[in-house]
Image (cartoon, rainbow, N blue to C red; front, top):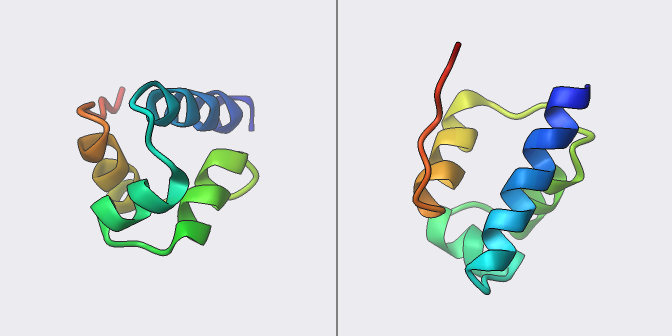
Length: 65
C-alpha cells in the first residue's frame, strides 16, 4: 500500500509540474478523468497497461524490478 501511495504522489506531482489538469491527462491517454483521479488517490490498484500509458504521457518509463 505504501508503494501505491508513493506512486500516486509521483504521478500527481509529475502531472502538476507540466501544468496539466486531470482532464487534460485523461484526454491524452484516452481514459476517463475518473481513472486518473482514482490512480492519483493511491487507493486503487492499477493495471500495468494503464500505468504505462500514464507514464508515457508524462514522458516517463516504467521499470519493473
